[in-house]
Length: 518
Image (tube, helix red, strand yellow):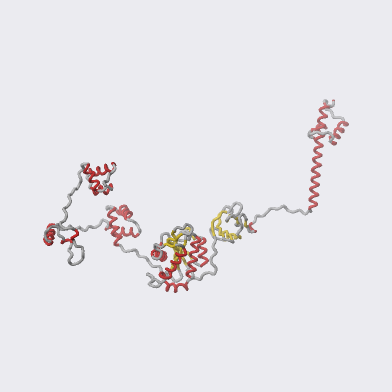
């Protein structure tokens, strides 16, 4: 089948051929085979560079050359290339062949900078970074390829990095870490799923406890530590761990913030956590080696139908092979060293740890925090602030987020109910009680009501009288009013009596009545 190139690729091959490129170079740059490129170039009349004729085939086939190691086998220099004898042919070939050129040893341009390059390699820098540093800081005139070759040669001949062995006393330290476990069939989906491998290794005897689990969380991480301590029959005084989220919330060299649940579990067993520095796995190299040992040897390529089956297989391998092996560093049996270390472990508490849930809550304007649709009151003065809350099936604890001080502890309430301690209840303002009895109060209220009604009647009579007076004044104006004389005494007395009696119905104001009287 003949390869047919696209028009664009064809023009590219022809253009490179006119530039006197070799067929090998055209193949490397374009991906077109040399035979195909040669056919297109010849069809276009482009002269090929370096065209050479093939040599005539040898008189003897390659199948006649002996490749064995016996005494009758011929060396490659004794193979004849013509019809003459082997001795004559080899002599003639040795006379005609020119001597092999010897390559003169040259000194690399990087040799004066060997110490600088080795220092950069010890810091983990690559060849490009080292070359850039040499050019910027020391005026290096060589190219990057020279530094690259020198670095490759130095890495090949350099000695491996040395590590110190951390020696600990019996019962002093344990190292923990996670790794990838085997493939186990998930009971929910029916498919194989990768599990997680938890490993705790004792620093003195190298005794390891390996546990498998489906998922990882703060509670699962703490429960795995508790199970490992139960299997060992005791606890160490310190635990060296990585800065994973389940154990360390905020990594820090001097004062790391531990997960509250994990911290309380370790305190329950009398253990102190020692988080490693970030990206420093050599501090817990014993457990790193234990994880790799389990992944490479018993679990490599294994599939299990259930997690219990995988754990049982791992426990059998641990007892049969891992505990009976001679450790490469201590040169002693692991089980024998663990028998010496087990009496030095801390005694386990009688009761297991009571696990709880934890979180941060903001105190509402009503002075309560919400936990699973129930409400619990902290002390006064925390409205709008955040508090740490811990709860289990029976208790709810409210703590200071900074100091960890217990502020309040309540019993669990049902959904929608509230819990508050008696000293935290707000005071209710009440009216002071009088010394009079209920009968006196009723009598006083009745008297006040009667007085109010009489005042209303008097005002109504006064208004009616004033209206009647003003109406009478408009209808009958006496002659003495034009001369601005005083009214007769009989008229004034009769008018006053009418106003006082209130016999005339009127809505006018009483002030006008008094004015007319004057």
